Length: 454
Image (cartoon, rainbow, N blue to C red; front, side, top):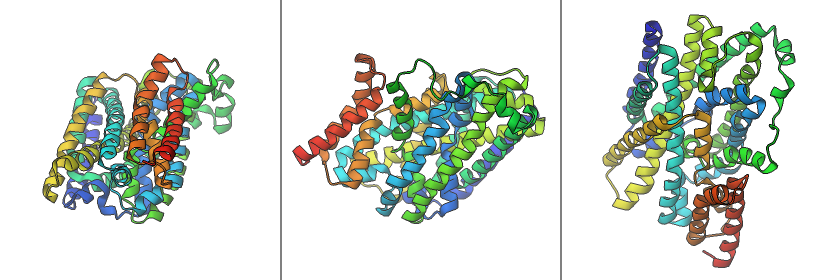
């Protein structure tokens, strides 16, 4: 075990825990726990959105895919997810915050009734908890690379720690740790990028020496429909992500919510291209390259001095932490606020708060199991974005802007959205089953909405 690195990592984690303990003293209501009292300004919301979105799939999963496949491995992340943040600002942020919702389930309840609130929340929970599991897997990989502990043990320790500090501080603690973690992420990835540029002989030499086949955005043999699918799932499938919407709904005003999405999108794309460039340049550096999701951590360990390597590893941990806790909070919000409380009757404020914290523990346990069983980070994340989201995207966006459709129409659309990708992919062999499901859901929602008037 690398004792100095382990001690530094422990100190960093204790700082995050201390912030959560501080925040826990300011959490008195469910609204404080879920959306930080809807009191946050533009810098905090934007940086938190960036830090939450910029997780293991960007730092590790995407860079590993680019190292293996070239630029085509970066289509989902960072390019796709940056566009998602932009679309959130255009389509959802202002209207959702203006109505004062705490979760996306609140919108579904107000627009379509309790039954759709429950179903929509149940659709979102598997995708979010899978996403959190992908981040735990990344955390385990980091601990294995940094201090040499077993992967399973690393995932378990990471899960225990994140559950504790997330259940204490809620979104308020999450937002403040995001601000620190996001800053460290930027510092860490810039340090590695500058090092790679220097070793490559400058930016000009770096780009000149990248092989032309690495710059292909579309791999050979890929059909047009499969190509559209790879763009559609991250961009549109993530549009209804409660993980990001929680930050948007925590904004002080609707205008702040919208502006934060635009600013976070710029942050995300600007910083996200750095690990992509590093992965493209790595073959020309004359170093031994790691494989799979450990590609970037192993590269940093070889290129950076021990202290700089430690800062970079802290950045990786920060990127992962800011995403895991967001996922656990999201599952907690949907389970407690939108499923259990409506089902079993209202609770006193203290009991609501306790229930939210208990659901963080439940979410952490499920995410731990997914991480133990998972293999590749980015594949888990893309899979998470595709779980039942096609129908949800349709009823949220169309339902938010029009009066078309009611509970019955929404139920039909959500049902098709759940089973459509499986039928299209496994039974019909379509190249773009999720996109085909999205188009079918849109047609069904509009058609049934006009015909049924419900």
